[in-house]
Length: 270
Ligand SMILES: Cc1cc2nc3c(=O)[nH]c(=O)nc-3n(C[C@H](O)[C@H](O)[C@H](O)COP(=O)(O)O)c2cc1C
Image 1 (tube, rainbow, N blue to C red):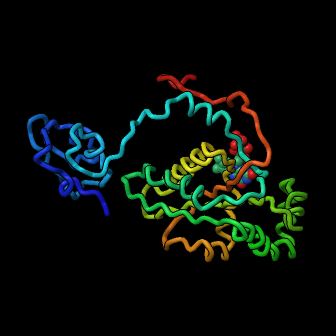
Image 2 (cartoon, rainbow, N blue to C red):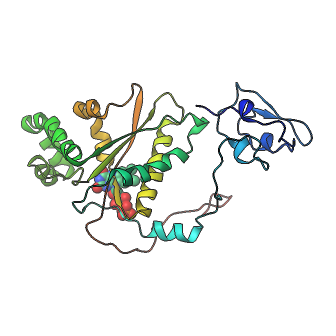
Image 3 (cartoon, helix red, strand yellow):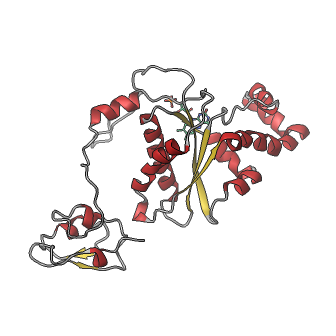
């Protein structure tokens, strides 16, 4: 059920402090210090900010204990600096409870204009293994009649393609869990919404000791692999934003120095 400030607010508790209108991102809440708030529900995006920032919890929207600074930057930096793409997985299934835990972060994802609508299709066990075979089947005609061989020769990936067509799972790397992230195409920020959700799940999985890699190749191949579309059962009008492969890492890795990146100052100089 979508959050509605008008229904949720307990006007007996409200102190008319004006904070809800100060934090409202869409200008749906009005009222200021000493003026009781009014809500324009046509503009409300149900993000719940009025409730989350209310100093007296006047919205009764089931707020949870905890603080926004619970984790701290140092543990987070440690987590990220130790993260590496994992492409060799231990042959251990991800349990349903583990999967549910890492996916639970999606409930806290921001989405542009709060339209939400994120859909994740999880492939585990034998089903995950079958993804590799289905893309090989889809590519076989192109391999037989030549264009794929030509692409291989021109791109320098001929040997890799040959290994793949012979049966080596170079796309999913036998990952025990493969996650497809879909969002509604009609949402103006649909691509970012899905990437943010996948990033948050990657971080959650990492914090639980799982390794992962983003599968850009699978995301591209999705469009030429009809069986995946059938298997995925994605809602009509949805966009595949990201594919994550996950599992327990077979090998330990060590943190390396950070990569280069650039922060520009106001004059456009680094
Ligand atoms: C959008 C995106 C797509 C990627 N696609 C693939 C892929 O298809 N296959 C793969 O093995 N790695 C893929 N990667 C992983 C990158 O190759 C990896 O991040 C890079 O090698 C740096 O290593 P690190 O993740 O350990 O820092 C992808 C990463 C991103 C961000």
